[in-house]
Image (tube, rainbow, N blue to C red; front, side, top):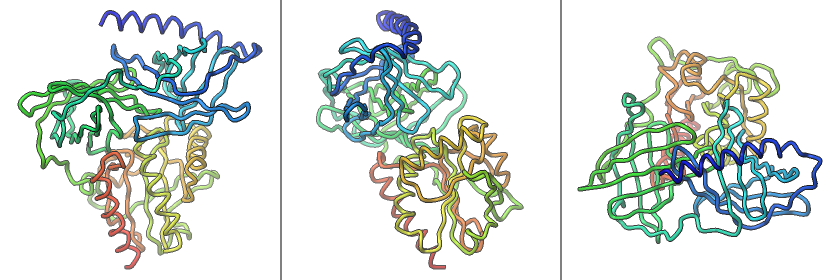
Amino acid sequence: MEKIKLNILYVAFICSIILLSCNSKNEANTTLKQGVWRAEIYMQQDTLPFNFEILKDGEKYRANLINGDTEVIPLDDIEVLGDSVFITLHIFDIELRAKINDTVLNGLYIKNYKDNYRIPFKAKHNNSERFINSKSTVKFDGKWQVNFVEDDTVTFPGVGIFKKDGDLLKGTFLTETGDYRYLEGTATDSTMSLYTFDGNHAFIFNATTKNDSIKGEFLSGMDYRATFSGYKNANAKLTDADNLTFLKDGYDKIEFSFPGLDGKNVSLDDEKYKNKVVLLQIFGTWCPNCMDETIFYTDWYSNNKNKGVEIIGLAYEAKDDFEYAKARVEKMKSKYNVEYDYVIAGVYDKEAAAKTLPMLNHVLSFPTTIFIDKKGKVRKIHTGFSGPATGSYYEEFKENFNSFMEQLLNE
């Protein structure tokens, strides 16, 4: 443990130098080596490993963020200035900033939309092995009913689904606000460590098991920490996602007037949405679960947009600044080729978001989808999203979604 602390102090020192070198824009650019790199983020006295690949087309760099062998995220906003590299992490307002020293990068993982959010990281070239000498057992295979605890007071349920795949353990946790996406790591007969890094999520799960019970710790980014415990249960489940968010007594429809990306206010009373089925997607561009959902909705809408249906994305962004929020949404829309509409609805604080939609009992999750029929009546509200990392849960969601949308469109 002391060694890790010393490493963190060392990398933090190196990073302080980087902040100066990054301004040396008049220096000749250092070459950033192509190929696969193995990186480690030093967070909360633990280490999160991940891989990325550097490529070059002419004079332009690009990269792939490799989140296990399941997800490859293209990165096309990379800049080498002097002896430093800046890698924007996909659509997020997040970057890796590092000093180049031949086959080594020393730097910071930075969330630009949060004050002083900087975590040390280091990367070495020509190393594609995420986990050194990885081995795993089947001890954690199956479903686990778990309960997470934040700050010893706030609790929320979850379902863990894991399976040994070769020398690795893979799976995810589902919660009532969404899943923790693609987790990958290793396991012995009594311990497991799982990781994910998709540009925004920087997660570590460490746990032990005994007699089909589980106990562990969940670390996220710079300072979030929760514990979890539970037991193996083939019938593990969560509250029905269609029953968590609902209209308050006295309300029978959704009303709002939010600015669209052109600055003009958008309302469900607009002619475009009359006599159509409308989906309202409560989301934020900072949210990887929302991106999974957006990919699904984008594909579905492109195949069904002529059937009398519209989707409006209600964006709740990191800053209460229209131009900032607009730029984030436009970047996401361009990356995913989204054809449906967007409005800037507010900031990503759940209590603040709930005040913008006072007819809801709460905003529990980003994402949340509100289904509105052709008469303007709210027919269902689905909280969270079980994405592709959840396997059969994702397939079940798609089946239910398609069936319900067919029903609404045929009424």
